[in-house]
Picture 1: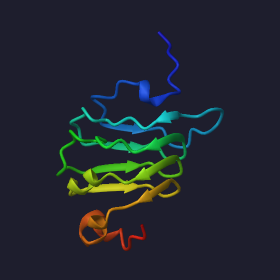
Picture 2: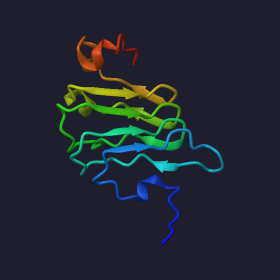
Picture 3: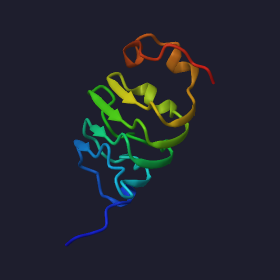
Length: 126
């Protein structure tokens, strides 16, 4: 059975551990809202950079993933907007790339911790 999977938010991704859909802008590419992966307990490696994902990062994004496991997320060069969810701060081993989006707010909690994201967040200008 073939389905139209261009809108990624319509996929069932509850048992996903790895997903690489980066750079799919040819044609319409992968479009729609970013799925929350909220009921996925697996440590996750998602590369969705360079797509047409839009809107805010869901506040429940990765909420059931073990926050002490390595988690790598590449959402670079999409069309995401809004604030970076404060819930990301709970991750002790998170590597997330949000470069090239229109995220416009990063809580100072992220900036005040030299160990979060291995110190990669060096300043906050909200």
